[in-house]
Every structure is written in C-alpha cells, then in structure tokens.
Length: 335
Image 1 (cartoon, rainbow, N blue to C red):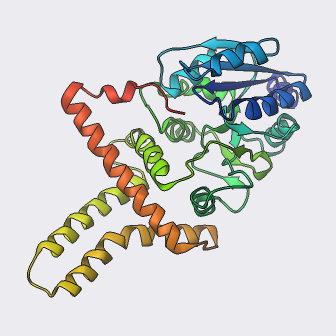
Image 2 (cartoon, rainbow, N blue to C red):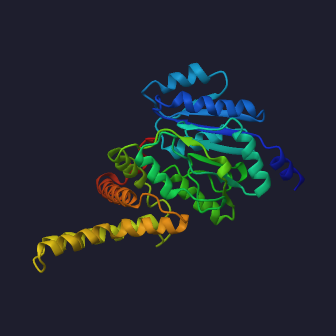
Image 3 (cartoon, rainbow, N blue to C red):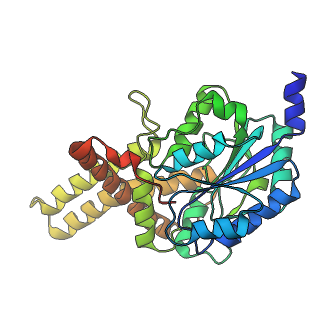
C-alpha cells in the first residue's frame, strides 16, 4: 500500500505520441508537448512514426531526436502503435496524446494533481477545436462536449491517461481494431472496476479536425470501421443501434417515395421525416444530456452525414469480410 501511495504522489509520466503524416501541424503540437515534458522532470517523451510519407518522420529525428525516444512501427493500426510505445515506456503512468494536439505547458502537473485528488486510474478530456474553428468543427464539438467534470464511460485516446497497472491489467489496446480502440479499451477498463474520470483542466486543442462536410464524412467512415469493437454478445453501443434504425427508416422512406398510395407532396414530406427522424432525435438527446442546444439545424445535418458515413463503413466492413476475411481491421491508421 505504501509503495502504491508513493507512485501516486510522485508518478513518472510516459508521454506516448503516435505520428503519421501530420506535417502541417506537427511542430506546433510537438513543441507544446515537449514544453510540458521539460516542465515536469519525472517524465519522458516517446514518439512513434507509423510510416509517414510527408516528411513527418524526418522532423521527428531532426527536431526532437535529442529530447525524445524516436520509434518506428510500420505497418500497424493506431492501437498497435500506441501499444508499441507503451512497451518502451518506463513510467508508472501513461499519457496517450495525438500528434495534432496543442497542450498547456503545465499539463503534466495538472495530470498528476487529477490522479492524486480523484483517486481515478484513468483520466483525460475531450479535445477542443482551435479558436478559429470551422462551422463543422464548432457544431460537432458543441454537440459532444460534456459540461462538467465527472465519471465517464470512455475518453478518446487523443488525450487519454492511465496508470500503467490499469493499462496492463486489461492488456492494452486491441490491435485488431483500425478505429474505435479507445472506446473498446475503456469498456474493458470499466469491466475490471477501473474508474474513468474526465477533467476539464486536462483539455487540449486538437488542430487537425475535419473542417468541411466531405472531410467530416471521410473521417467518420474511418471511425465507423471500429463500430463493432465494443460489441459484447448481443450488445451494441448506442451509435450502432441508432445507425441500424436510421438505415431501416431510410429504406422505408425510399419505399414511400417510390410508392403510389399518396400524393407526391405527402410522399416527400413523409419520406423526409423518416430520413431525418434519427438525426433529430440524436440532437435532442445530446441537447438534453448537455443541458444546451447549439445550432440545432446544422447539428441535424451533421448527424445525417454521420449516420450516412456509418452506413458506408458498415458496407465496407461487410464487403471486406466477404472478400478477404476482414482485412479492413488491419489497415494502417489514418490519424
């Protein structure tokens, strides 16, 4: 018990950063992470290049080689890259942060304080868009930003910290998943009794968000490839259930539009209502949970795109399973 208290009061933090083709934002992000590491003596920085082809790997060596351990893992899912970094880490605590996040200089001091005061084994915070955010970034963030500190079901791995003991107790990230590895890891952490606490003081700025609707669609297709990672038995997460419901209603809407039992205006109204039903309900659910509503019409549009992306990912998963046994799960990370 005394040894555990000592580790919690004076932890060594291993900062694990996966890197793949982030040339446009890399130095802004890593300069801030390095400043945080330098500000906290009991820490180390581990950078893992995942097959960058845009010059990012050269920047890692030339600009950060003297201050960080530079590793390479090609090919590999984002989960495999993070696990690889963790295996080379020496800290009592692990902080996973993406290579497009700008962090406060005193972040690691804040992190240690949150671990100490809350007694949680897992912490972090959702990433926020930059000050000059696009409308897509702003509205999507406002729809998902949780209003206060507290226990959560999961925290995204772009800014996720935990004790090494908790990480090792569940075996790290599932390397078979091309995306959704953070939600699946947090599910296993909760099943083992580990507490996941989100703290707003640990917020960081995420630079490389999707800034247009087409880019948002592509990103959500990729994220959707891991949609079944949290499935346990017959259970599915809420986004997957809502996607299936949305797909069903869209098929019904198509039947209504192609039918002849109603006048065309009525068919258009009914078909449109069925198509929008799930996005509208989702926005209302988010607004109720967050105690605020922000640009609801645009939020409904984004959720329409989101569910279309998830359906596209489902089709891609089914096609891959039929074609080659699910090799889509092993594609390199796009992060």
